[in-house]
Structures are given as structure tokens and as C-alpha cells.
Image 1 (cartoon, rainbow, N blue to C red):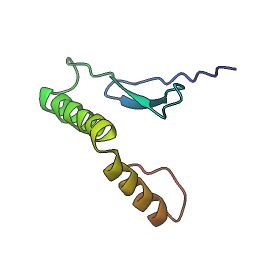
Image 2: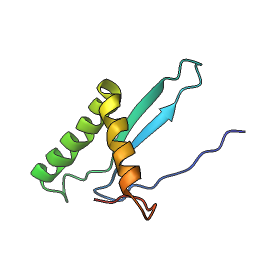
Image 3: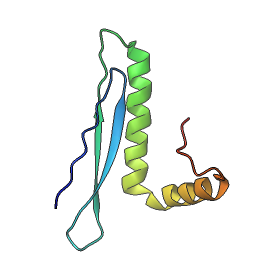
Length: 86
């Protein structure tokens, strides 16, 4: 049974969705979505978050090994098992 979860993006929020493909090849899609209001957020702030998000997508699709390594370090150093918020 398919299960969907709705995520609400407030102004200034963004989301990076990694979607598992069921093609049997172990591949995945990366979706980037954001809610940046140019009337509220300064242009340089929008640019910063856009570049940050695109950098995450780039590494998720081109240098997965470095992300897996960073994720592994994050888990082994995270003694409280909480979500990491920077």
C-alpha cells in the first residue's frame, strides 16, 4: 500500500527529498523544492540557500561516497540519537 506524507514548507523553508526507485537497480531520485518569497527574503539569502541546496544535490548524485562517509561519522559521533540541526 502506498503511503504519502505531506510536508508543509513555510516561507524560507526548503526540502531535499531522496526517493528510492523500485527499478531493481538500487537507484534513487533527488528532488529539491523550496518556498522562497523574493518579497520577504533578501536576494543574497535566497542565493545562499539555493547554492547550499544545489551543492547537496550535487554530492548526492556525483560523490555519494563522501556523503555516506560523513553520515557514518555523524551517526558514530551522535550519542543522543537525535536529529542533527545546524
